[in-house]
Amino acid sequence: MMPDEKELVTVEEASDWVRKKYDRPVSASNISYLIQYGQVKVIVDNGISKVSKSDLRQYYSAQSKKEIQWKQQLGEDLNWQLSFDKVREKERTKHVHRLHPYKGKFIPQLVEYFLDAHTDEYKKETYFRPGDIVLDPFCGSGTTLVQANELGLHAIGIDISRFNSLISNVKVKKHHLAKIQYEIQKISKGLIQFVSENNWGNFEQQLLSELYVINKRYFPSPKYRYQVRRKEIDQKTYSKKVEYEFQPIFNKLVNEYKLKILQNNGKDRFLDKWFLDTVRQEINLVQNLISQIEEPEIQDVLRIILSRTVRSCRATTHADLATLKSIVSAPYYCRKHYKLCKPLFSILSWWERYTKDTISRLYHFEKIRTNTNQICLTNDSRNVNIFKALALEKAAFGAQANDQKIKGIFSSPPYVGLINYHEQHAYAYDLFGFDRNDNKEIGPLYKGKGVEARNSYVRGVASVLANCQNYLTDEFDILLVANDRFNLYPQIASEAGLKIVNEFKRPVLNRTEKDKSAYAESIFHMKQENF
Image (cartoon, rainbow, N blue to C red; front, side, top):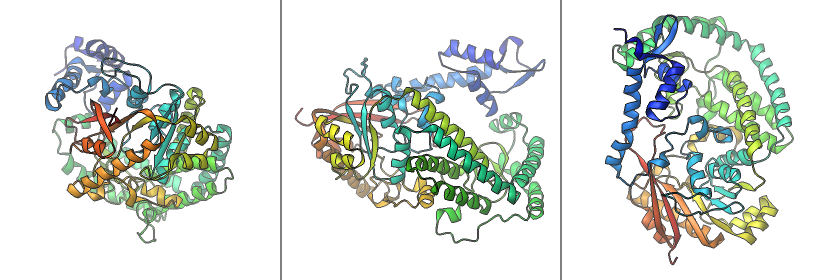
């Protein structure tokens, strides 16, 4: 049944209508996203794509009810302002913050809220001012360092992971972008020639053409997605039949191009197992070309681009990139895109995409950066002599920090039994030959969440805080972001000679996990026990 004409609006009109009715910063692209993923139905009216206000009401009313429902489940002290639910993804991933994927990072707006000088009904005091030094002893991908730079703060990060330090330092260093672009052009030219000589590009183009035909026939979007969401189609049974029908077409193309799909290498190394043979050859080529560049800082930027490219080219389904359940070497039904997708047989398209994106992000950050110092040290925060380690890397900054001292900490320690931080970037450690310090991680997934793991976690975080106090000013502030489901932080504070003076509780809305149930984390404000 066709909706009432007054109910139908164009994509642009829909974004205006939602903004006014629900006070949400919704763009036309946001509405297009809802159409693409079957959340609302597209209706062609006189050749113009429209959506119904009824579908929009259903979707955005559910979103608006979330605050009430979550407070009922998590408590009225939940600070919804700290959900940043009205901040668009473009702002949550602005400039260098999306230079490389990283599981477990916090959004820059949360860091900015506590680092900047403003106060409000919740944040009643200022913890840091321009010129201060802030410390992040669990630096991760460097969000605190980047936001400190934006706000005119100096920052020191420490991380046990060599790769995490690489990501962080590439984000905050000043770069000679013209030189980087020159080296990118040389490598891209070599890669294009290599792909052309091996005829892989023609194979992929023909494969994509065949996939387009079968996807158009069996998975017309967004109609098919809409039907699946409403259980009008049994997705599993239907997709298996299409996969079976396409297999002979794929096999014929592989034979025609005499393509070698799987590597002959053993499976001991990550690179041997999770990449098709053609992809592995291209990775080796680019890695070799990067190693020939003389300037280490340019090498580091290109390593980040290559790592990001490699991550996107693992031989698995799009839905399983984070979990790597099984190797995929042929086209498959993709539950993320609702159609037949293929594994990657070449890194070229992703390499070209990420080189452009990286230069753009570095350029945008360069325009807003302040003349302050930031660095991430690869070390163990439990026992490192911060000022000595800093002086070895940046002598002037080391002298400044030793004289000025660190004003406080803003950090997010690992959560108990949630992530193996080295393993999430196993491809990069294998690719660049970095030493791994898995055994020094605090609260890794492989240790679980049992009593012994929790006790070890308490000792680890408390040791970090105790050591770091040696380098802080007398009236320091420590702010730690954590989901304390096991109520460990009062004990952590006590063992580190600290006391919790305030707790900010925030809802976490933008989670990547499939579980979208009500979820909160706290920002614990700690001071000296005798404060």
